Image (cartoon, rainbow, N blue to C red; front, side, top):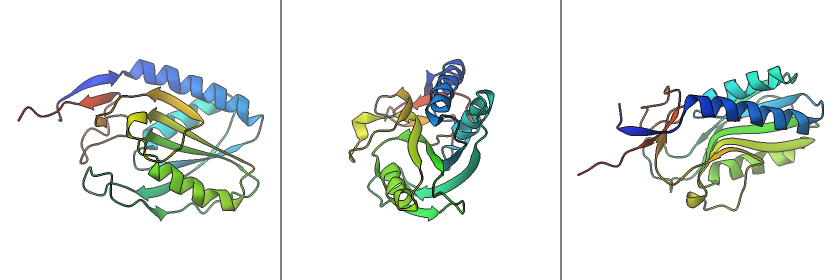
Length: 178
């Protein structure tokens, strides 16, 4: 396992996901949403958010988009590409795009540009983590779980080279001491 320290523990995540679901449910005003998760990092957050919304009386449809950003490296300069689209009809629907982290903003921006022409009646974004220090695209999420400092994060769906994704908390990878 990668050396890391716990940045956001399980209890804090659970509490915040429930708070987000409550606010989102109120904002939906009874509209059933389509949750579009950005793979692969969002799957844990999306699952917990969908269950929390259900506890608020909201029954979402769920689908995923695949956006490639880093490939096998951690270099954020690689171009962002949409590799898997949703097959759901979005016109006139309430759509919530769910991602694990808003970093540079390139992925979320690409996805929104792709979805707007499909004319959803309500289009919002929800991210577990926002790392404003890395933002290169002027974009803000509508719903944010936590603001986090710059650094590589793992756990709760986030990984580094395939490691750390299943941790039940968010951890900050410690820099090597070379």
